Image 1 (cartoon, rainbow, N blue to C red):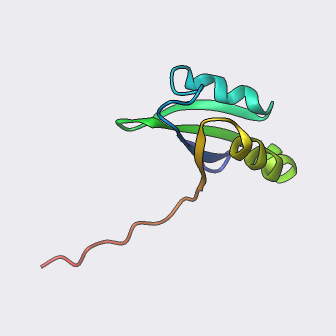
Image 2: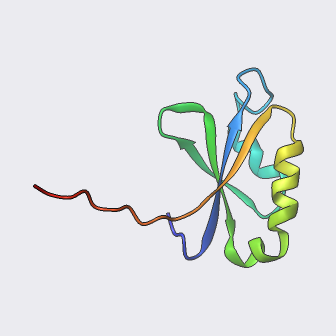
Length: 89
């Protein structure tokens, strides 16, 4: 994943929704979207990306279209976070 060049969006799908059997079609909701793939072993969570240059101009529109899509339960913008180290004994 290239967090400098792309903004990533996790989309949770309804188990009975239209996109669950063909999640790559989510990328057709907006021309700026690209399908990255499934999130881990979660069949109903898909990761999409938007180029940072497009995100600045179309981010809100992309999110609105995803949230309005039938069968989409949740939309979360992924943020890069620094993991803290555990104290070593």
